[in-house]
Amino acid sequence: MDLRQKNKTNPSKRQANMGSFAPNTGKMKTNFVPRVNQLDSIQLDNEITNLLRQQIQNILQVLPPGLLSHLQPEINFVLNSALWNFSIRTHYATFGQQMLSIAYEKDQLPSAKLALHYLLTTVLPYAKENAQFRLTSWSRVQKLLQLAENALVLFNLVNFFKFLRSGTRPSLVDCLLRINHRSLDGAKRRTIGYSYMTRELVWAGFLELLGFTIPFVNYHALKRKLRNLLRIEAAPQRQDERVELTADTRCAYCNERVILPHHMGCRHVFCYLCLKGNQLADAGFQCNVCDYRSETFRKVVVL
Image 1: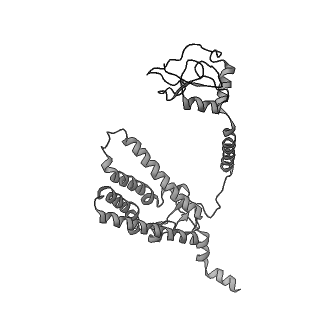
Image 2: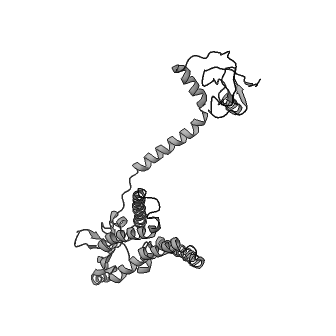
Image 3: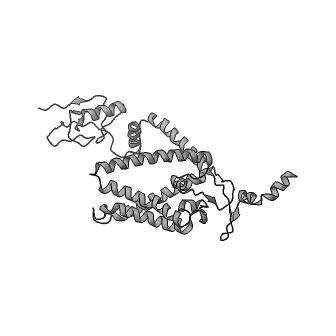
């Protein structure tokens, strides 16, 4: 009996837990938003901002060098202001939140809080970037900025642990302004597909297989056997011409100036390290010019 009376006297609590319907979209809004969706929305916002900045950088590369480099803080400020205007100010949700059907309630963001949100998310980052970009000679200002950044990192860490415990207000700005996320699709579970994960596992296993087997493949011997099989070049013949070494002589393998000249018995000259390294890698190494093969090599003697 008491339980029925309690349920009858508290209909607003039940409605708050179940959620409410959005008048414009017809979707059910609820206070419950999974933590992973809130974190993903922040990640999506960062990716969208970086993508747009990269596109702007690609456009600026066409201009003469240094023409707009001194205006980099202002360019970032205009970009962030445009993103804020077409997301938070217009739809009460960032673009990352809109992709995941998350939004702020209009009553949580009146005009004063909107102005504070713009100040914290757009104006203050511009002021910091402007000071770091133009006030590099002011050591005190740089020290203050460094202290402020360290304190901000600490506060973000504390707020992150608080978010993991409560599940609300993942960013420090949300915590300062005391605004919460609302889901527009109701408290339904997030569907997870494992097809992408399966492809990644198969690809990772294939890469591990390649990394294990490739070191056992003798690339030099395989290349020599394929070349002989396809008969790309003439059959090896011993050449009795005398080896000539001049100031312009280059190694037959690396095509650089010969260092410690040696030869295999043909008239082509190799660096000692090129010839020795190839014979160690492939016992059947042939001259890559005339296909002459020899198990020994000799130093070129200058007469």
